[in-house]
Image (cartoon, rainbow, N blue to C red; front, side):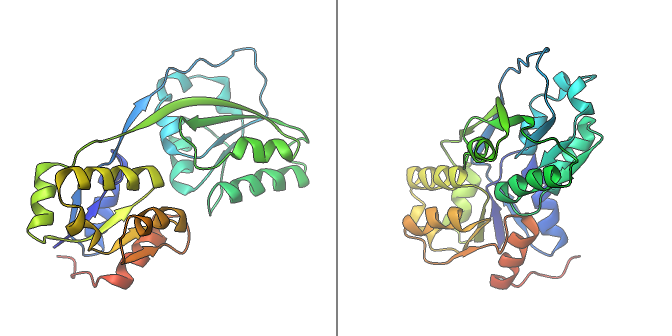
Length: 249
């Protein structure tokens, strides 16, 4: 029996390794495909800081960042995973919010209050094409100027791998992990198209947030669990409450 990981590549590989370290078998079926968008930054623009809500936003422009003056700016990341990607890209001053975009917004404001960031600062937001919330507007209401640059898009994968369909039919999957509303919807569409929707929705669905969980519940899943906070460790803890992992070899 295995846990199905629907997270996009290459992050799904990290998740699978982590699951196996916790005693779970794991299978992969990425439901979104990463596509970089050409990055055309204004060389004359003056920014005070960078904000990033996904490691993918940095991955998409890694070559463009080499020797870029942006690397000298403070960077606010939505979590430690994204912060680690920023450090690997060459940013020297990286601050990680723990708890999602709302906490990231509050972290930026806190830096202004502590006078580590000037009031009405201009922020460069490196973002994906589809955003779960309008962080730029939220920061704009607080007096910041936010310049959003789309650096990547995530394209839904229309079908499940044949071996995953076979695993559903053979009852070899015991739970499914979901990381975003868009990937959850793509999973539902792919499962429906493959004729395994009933088998898939009968299983425990572990979601990284309540918003993602709502997508599965609306589709008819009855065993839906949301992580206590929007991070992978909390997601694993939710999974472990449902399934008892086998001892690691």
